[in-house]
Length: 308
Image 1: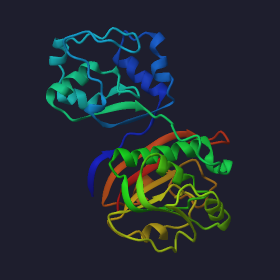
Image 2: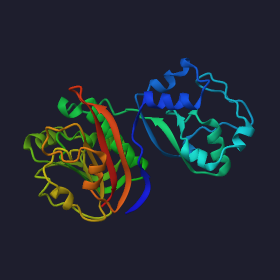
Image 3: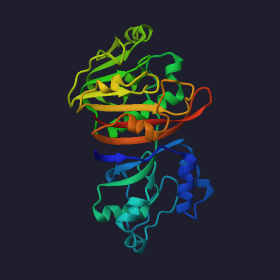
């Protein structure tokens, strides 16, 4: 199997990131905890160094958190490339380094273009989007869809002729595709329940969005390198004919979850079994995100993005 910048790291809670920062910084002051704790979820990924506000290595820099940032040239000299790769920096939304200024400076000196980093997930979904049934817009489902679309954007998978969303329910995934600028000439939302597709048609978000009432296991999909098939409901669709029907070379973005032992359709309740169930020729992202559903159950949502 070929891989390209495979993401094996999961999404982290703020408490985990803060623990990481404090382990790296023995002198960390509790008054600074808010910098991390204000953001509940954090991603760990390889990011362009251009996103990072790298401090000059020979001067003290102004800091939005009123810290004194002094770069020690001797410390920078003692940092090796493997230190940068094995110890991710931590940045905020604006690219300000919370932990790892010296490693960022060394990365710039080495001419690196991408480095591993923790950064906060910011839910900036358009609040003016039309209302949809509450069940399909719970906080955990929204966060999962936002994460998936941001992964696509981050991987450069954002230009398609057609995007299919299988098991689309009330079609909320379309709003995230549009808001995150995943460009597609056509977004086709497929669901077996006519009540759901009728809702989508009555509340159409965009002239490019269309709803189709069909069994995902029987529908015929277009094929080719400009096609993306999204399925955030793999745990609720019986069988795998829908996956078998996806042509080789097609891009796919899938999500599933665990902690559904009473759901006979959910056969893949570990990230390992989820990964094995949907083999791809190229895998670009494989991750899990801890969430809490509306009923209060804690679970992990799995994400897999790649090419069949």
